[in-house]
Structures are given as C-alpha cells and as structure tokens.
Amino acid sequence: MPVAPGEGMFSRSQLARLRGEHPRLRVPRPGYTYVAGVDVAREPWGAPDRPTALVLDAGLDSPAERGGRDATVVTVGEIEPTPAGDPLVRVVEHYRWTGEPHHALTSALADLLKRTWRCRRVVVDATGLGAGVASGLVKAMGAAVEPFVFTAAGKSQLGFDLLGAVNSGRLTAYAGDGSAEFAEFWREMELAQARYRVSRTMDFFVEPSRGHDDYLMSLALMVRAAAAGQPRTARGRVPDEPPL
Image 1 (tube, rainbow, N blue to C red):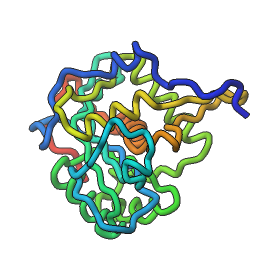
Image 2 (spheres, rainbow, N blue to C red; image 1 turned 180 degrees about the horizontal axis):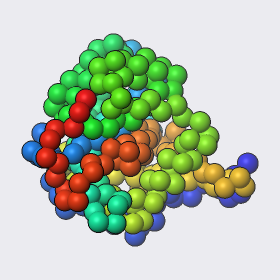
Image 3 (tube, rainbow, N blue to C red; image 1 turned 90 degrees about the vertical axis):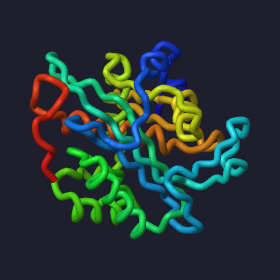
Image 4 (cartoon, helix red, strand yellow; image 1 turned 120 degrees about the horizontal axis):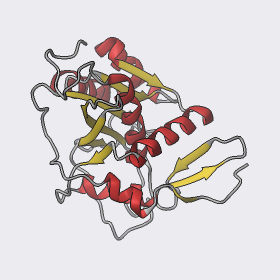
C-alpha cells in the first residue's frame, strides 16, 4: 500500500534540469556511443503508423479522444563519459509506432538500432507481448540487448535510477523542435506520477485517464541501458565502433 497518494514525479526544478539545448539527431554522430530504451505496445494489431506519424492534440486529455492506442516508443541516448564515472546522457531521438504487428516491429527495430544507430546497449520491455519482440532483438543483436521484465521491484529501481539521473543533471532531452514527439514526451514528463510504498519502493506512471506513459517508460529503460553501455574511455568519443 502506498504511504501517500500519487504526486508529480518531477518537480519544476527537475523538469528544468531535464530540458537540454542540444539538437535532435536523425543519424548518429561519428565516434559517439549510443544506447536505447524500448517500451513495447500492449496492442500490436491494427493499421500501423510510421515511426514519425504521431498525431497529437495537446488540448485533449482523454486517451480515447487522442486515439487511445498504446504505442511502442524508442528513446535513443548519446553517451559522453565524465571523469567522475557517471556519463552524461543526451536524449537525441524518438521513434513511435502504433498498431504495428510485432514481427514487423522487430525487423524495423533491429534495422534502426543495429544498422542506423549501432547501439552499444538496448534495454527492451520483455513483459507479456513484449517478450517476442525482445527475443527477436536478442537474435538480431546478441548481447547488446537486455530484455527487461517489469516487476514491482524492477520498476521501482528504474524509477529511482531515472530520478537520480535527472537530479544530478546528467540526463537532458533535445531542444524543442516543434515536433509531435517532443510535445508528447514533455506532456508525459509533466503528467508523470510517483507513489512511494512503506517497503521503500516506488511506482511511477501516467494516470490512464490522462493518456499513456510510453515515453516515460522508454526513457527509464534508456537510462538503464546507459548505465551498462558507457564506453571505457576518458573523453566522449570511442576509437572503434561498438561490437554487436
């Protein structure tokens, strides 16, 4: 049982720390290391959208009014090591699909994450229907992929790690670009709720009546990927491409 009702996960000052000034990237920068978090949709059937085809009306709070479909969201992060050991992590790209069959989704994800971004580490939601997507990515990318099954304890750790990255100023998101992805990402960050339990664990989410939390969960998974995927170098660049 929570010890207190849900409250905003991020304060105004935390949201301000999360706002970055770097540009969104469509392709990786040579020599930099990239990681990703993948939150898999629970509803894979229906007419698919393309990854950038997010239709958003920020004035509609009801998920039914906004389409109501769960989405698969990918958050791509760029890592820059620091002398202290904890890397700087910049969110540089988002992808979103709704209604994509999971077999087609797995192929698209492997192409993006392995061939386009050459991700050193990918943490993918392997809960329920996500297990098939995670299995397919492991086959395509091997040890670079970590399937993550959401449990109360595991999700709690994701939440605390995400808060730690935000509080330290190590995590920033790309500057506003007028895109629907940018708008929905920040909508979820502002609506994110946290509940703290007597057991010193936490839950975090967006109230279902307000919409989905696909970007929020994808971000938390990306932070986990960054912790395991930072390059062993003292400067922000790596001499060789990451192994896959």
